[in-house]
Length: 368
Image (tube, one colour):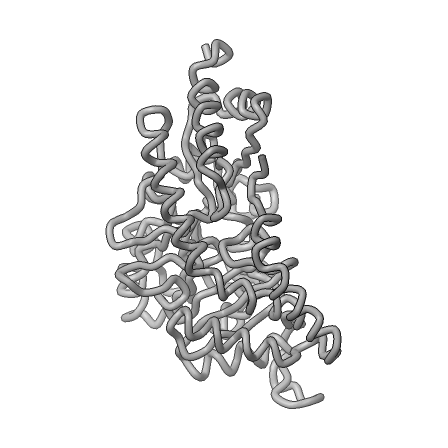
């Protein structure tokens, strides 16, 4: 059993993937070739925004968004400590200060009330993370930010394809940022990402920043970065997007089936009202996680932990002087969460195997 089954997906769309790759190899425009613009148009239409700006990774998407928003050294950017390091890493790279806010214990997403309390005159931006595949309460965060002129950037690395109040993740704030890392709901065969916005000025600035700040060849009004998306990856994303709606529907069905089967066995995920969930990860909470994980491994069930150490406890952020106990909900989740095999091609037979193994693992004598 694989944690994420990418081979079955490739077998399903092999002819289309191979054809699109062959086309790129034949025209030879490997950087910013025509497929990039085609992919951006298709993604913008799917998300429901005016602009999609393809870039080299989800991390680059966040960096471009912050740079386009004018975040600079000394500014404060509010985000969550319970996420992958990229979210806060890009803040620190610009010399800005990550300001962490604890999470909701049910959805694992940042607390809007905590965000409101954390805003200061130095707050330049807020990055809520739509973790595990469902959106944060973006409307509440937007409301807190709007009157103060604060930029809101949704980190939608795991939630592409999810909705809140019927609106797509990525279209819920001034800028949305997606990752197309191979394990993500919509994924390429390497690193890739995109920024989404309906703001013409922000879009133009991000397009400029991703190509070394140039507005035309060898003319650079801005200090930018090299964040271009390879044409081959854009071609792959174009083909994968053709089956993405049915894959998102399959993820939703399988996530709900997991919830039914695991009810009463472990602490199962909660989908917030007015959200749909794309289940980038199916993550439960257990006692004695290390032992449970070891038991599952013995039974042939792969698992992962997203994430074992909150960011304020990472050595890289020791300069913030935040001790253990600063964000108790995040810290408790980090000790208890475990992600199970998930993806649109997970069979019910394999799911039943996972559920049976987990049932036995949490009852195992080693737990005593």
